[in-house]
Length: 356
Image (cartoon, rainbow, N blue to C red; front, side, top):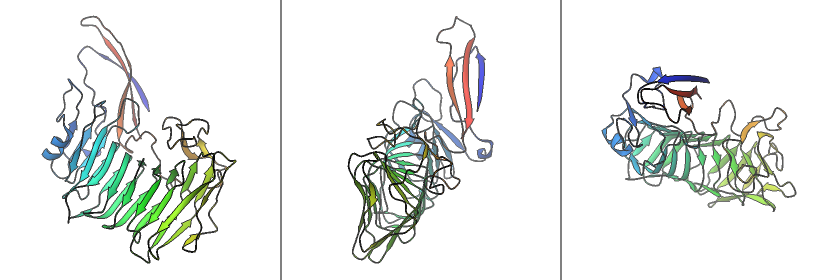
């Protein structure tokens, strides 16, 4: 991280997502809907419509949402962040449509992610470092080689039957219900699950299918005993491996449901504190608090050295970015500037540049 003090005598325009040298081969478009700012596009859907497959769209932070969009091309959409206060890129509903194979979306706050159209295979779609309120894919289009990594999922989450080779890893889940209608080629591992109620994980796939949940941490702060409810369709089964549960209100317990179709392996640790580096049980905003939430500025979900679960959760070498700044991309933040200057005077600006 570097801080710079710059002196300017001309009006300033900052593009707060910088262009890495290794992306210069693609066409890059700047999208910015802030008033009185020069950019290639002020409207995200217009930018998508005009871009060619393989292009990159840098969507700048704004207090105004970029609205509902349809993604129908192989594009890389990079937002500024999903939770850095004053530096967020917000999208309403993002609908995935024909032509979106190999597209990537990073660093955005997305209210809803769904699909539009039907009968097309969409391959190689990736969502990384986003905050997504509701998620639902696979009911119309066929999704193959889908990657969901480093995201925060707030509400309903449904992966429908028209999907295969899906990797869901290193995410935070706050949904009370997660439903899978395809589990045979699903990898669901190294996720942290936080919900103050009884969380439900559902295997609604075709019968005789095994849903495996591995290396996940389930935490809450509830003034009652809570259960991870495990539901199935027909003769489906569910297996829990290397997972941990913990209720920060340690007067009460947090356990997995048991039944004949559920296998809880011996490596599972129930009612065991994972020893995150920093969480605050008395603060409702924290993942250890009494609400379904987390505090991206203060919750540090890395694990202490004494943690009993060093290979579980968001880890295995992955660096989870709390604020959703896209991993591997440089960014700039204005830390301070002179509020007023004399005509033709010098404007002092302090900026911070870093790559995540």
